[in-house]
View 1 (tube, rainbow, N blue to C red):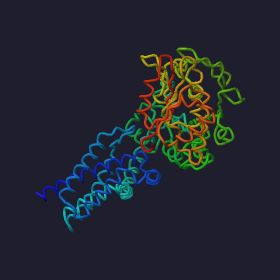
View 2: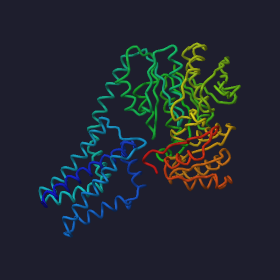
View 3: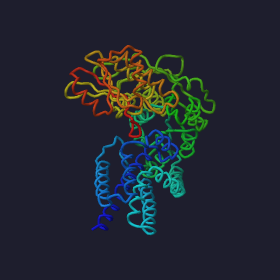
Length: 520
């Protein structure tokens, strides 16, 4: 009987260890499979958390001869309970078992089996159980080790895919490649430009947030067809050289830089490094190409572009090439006029907010450069649908307006979203936010400023999570926001429950950012 219980203990711990490794793989994936970023996240996690202390206590019990059968029963019960909880937990960004993730998971499991198997072979099944529990406790470091071991294989696979994508592009000499980058606004601009250019061209764009080299390569390999004559390529970056790497692959002829702001400062360290990286797109353009850059941002306006013709745009008339006039927010549409190059193009869109109008202007400039007729641009703009989680508005059946700006908040975007909320005069103006992330040393300062801005724009505030709570509350207090109209929640579920209690028809709710699972 005792050996059967020992075997069940071993198998239960093997299952639990597999679940722990799967969770750590999910966190590594959210950190772009980069051990340095993943390790920074780990440093923010408490090793003395209750679940980890329970594991350590079980390991201690398994290492003694105290009531061995009782200890095994307790261990089986606890680890199966924790495994079921891991299975049932819902995540904002669940693990995607891509081919890379699958290879990495298999490698981590093989390492686990080798270590546990050696413990069984050279000692006993009971020692194998102890080894498995130790691996579960140290699963983050096992995952980083597996990631290092798999790196040569991944590099070889990536090189093969890179060459295939390069070959496909080389067979399409007539293809116009448009690169889009920026601290924010690039995904929205990509969608808007795609919709407009589809009025005249066969267009392919990188889907979703496929803005890394491998995302671009996958798009080319799986979706590029001989009939495509325009390729819109979104280019993301976390460090210097990231944009150049994509440009070296796709060789863009047109580049749009939507913003240079204080985003991802944890990896970039300074706004100057952000500027340098974003302008890698302009630097890669041929002399016959075109750079379209947003002069509303100081670190774009002060950066000359000498290697290629550059068209600069701003919301207000600042004397650059393009600007917007006559902005009117009606109940069913936003109406405005793009002015530049001797033209006045009157447009109507379902989109709201100056940031969206700025992104639309960039798309219109490129469309006119590619000789899309004004009438086709007007039709395309009028049919553009709002991009999910990027300052899009909808109304619930209960008469509550929802402004969804939950994707990747930043100081400028948050300010613009609050400006839209401020314009809502019917009912209460409610914000639900966990604040902003990846701002490096300025994290506290910008979230405090956000609190001050919220205080002047909102009637009711819900601050979610602990990560930015103190900074936002300090800003709210400085803005003299009444405490009775403030709700602090640990989770979005708590905030949603509170919203159901206070929201009334005519109210407007702004969702500003939604932190990934790697933040609390």
